[in-house]
Image (cartoon, rainbow, N blue to C red):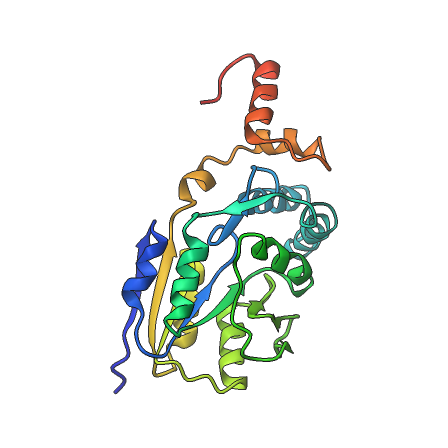
Length: 250
């Protein structure tokens, strides 16, 4: 019978990760709303989810809505959107973990064709991942790749499937896997995917962006969208909304 530890922890602090490091640990990080986030409502993860739901309400199928969202995101937004760190301590903490000899990878729902924009977005903040394995295709039903230390799953593949394929293909045998993500559904998905493996699993549900996600206002995003390719700040869009409505939002 396996004695592997399997647990999920919720925290606002990125420093929580250090408490769970042990010998031969593989640490995986989600990207959006975990390491970096959009500087404004428009272009954020929460905007994307809202925009996709609006497309469905207008009669698009979920697959069509996902395709339209992806095309708009990668053609108009991703190449130019300003991003910021979720926590200013992240680059130093990741380097500390790396210096301790642990293996660090990215595990994101971003599509493989977003890789060329993702790496520069992260590198501007000093974030990089370990390149111990060559870039490679992940053999799944939908496109997925491993490139420069990041597993790009795409939204049509489960993160658990992508990770299992990569672990098996490259004969990884960590004693412990730590996965950091802002979504509990992703944390639980990866836990289920690793259940067959005799290795510890620590899922860390990072809640640092919860307040911002919950305060998302589609009216702000709609105003910002009208100013593309210029990205209006939330504060600037808020002032325009006040002028239009003549009342405060918060």
